[in-house]
Length: 276
Image: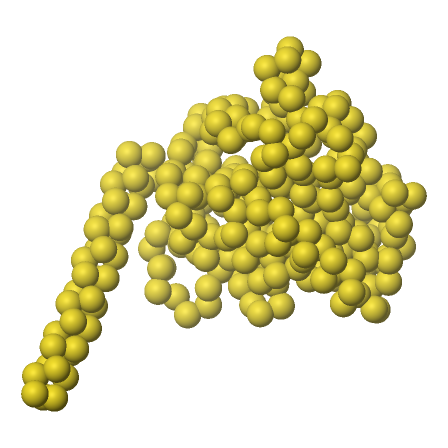
């Protein structure tokens, strides 16, 4: 895990892009949230593509969420939003773009299984997610059996009306979302944390590691190639202090694993001695 603190939101997005571009190559599988579209991050993607620095022709794009009960080609949802505002500007081959589609949320099993297969067949190289104002990631704060894999999320009538007002052509109150285990399966995972209202969740991550109710953030914190990007307002401590704390915890964990291994070996040796 790495922890990177930047002065501002723009600086966070620029720094994250610097890490992101290290993984850009033909055949790379990328999963971006809708929140990142039309930001400095995607502006750089588009600019670098125009200048010929990177081609997205053979890059695979996996959507994280999409509204249920719509035909995603016909109705303006998250897929068509991404296609209009980002994918076409990158000249992505649309055969390499996958978003979940659930035409009937009351009979969703088959559609969810189809997207689950897509995720299994296209292991993600880089996934990016944002921490929400409530400390949640992918619509949830706490990890449950229901949100660990591809699943349906229900939202309120008020949220539905707001989404319709913003141009989303949706019928119901549900969307399909990937789960935290899908993020854990990514080769690289970037978590973006912006604003002072998120600081308490970062502090909680480092101070309450043994809490019984696991947050999705605390589970993602166990990812071996995780980078948390924060602005100064959201940062728990300085970058140097947090990275020292991370190294200290890693040493503690390694010592614990060594001790457990030694205990197992000692127990095995005792059993062998008794057998003699």
